[in-house]
Length: 123
Image 1 (cartoon, rainbow, N blue to C red):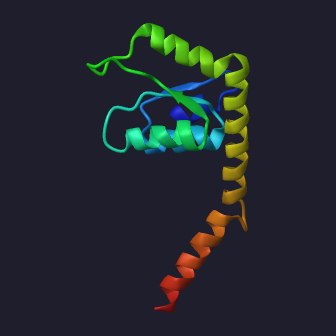
Image 2: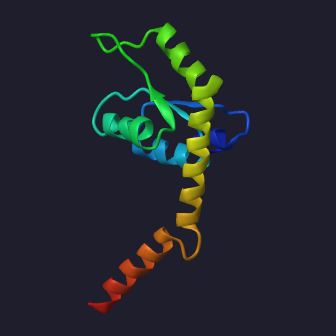
């Protein structure tokens, strides 16, 4: 159901723990994110979301690891409104397009899978 929800046109942003599957789903659909990582690979994924791809913001937490309601509201508003929100939405849309191109027949993902299978069949 998450993929169907993220694909709905009414979704303006996704508050996410930054698990890899959730991150890929949001990226592939062009949904801006509010990153709230907890553990494991999630902080690294959040760094990609915020610093490399520029498709979201990271929630700042207290010393105890708690996000205040004010901080959550701030991040959601920043992602959805104003100039910063426009920049994030533009980046999310561009990244979505790149993902779609990679997944199309003849795209980089398709070619890589074909090459991988060909290598397996050689041996």
